[in-house]
Length: 165
Image (tube, rainbow, N blue to C red; front, side, top):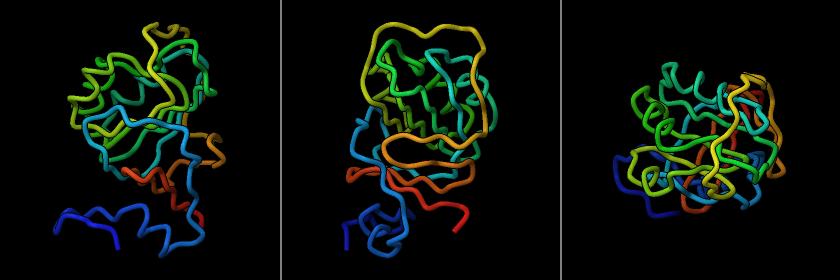
């Protein structure tokens, strides 16, 4: 059993993995960039390519404790999340953002009460072409995530309990 603060309401990923062998575990490719290392919520998904307009659109909506999962194809060309969008996510009640790509404004992101995982940091901002898809299955780090899947993140990694079990 993992050490969890009493009353935290968060179940560590190691405990979830033991209790749910069917759980999906993302390959350990993503680093922690947020101010909240442990977070959990239902997934909302966005698929983009070096363009963060749909990321912003999603984060401007009420998060209701959800986790925005952004598939930027693993691109290392630019960041699709930075301090401004991180602040918008906090203001709108998102629990976290998981990015298959890059973030920027790392020092600012680390101060936010928001869980953030991404491949790397990159200083360049993304394009603003409004290209991409929302609320679609996304696949990266060896896992396919669907809107509504339950996403858990902590110091041990990222785990998904599919909604369709």
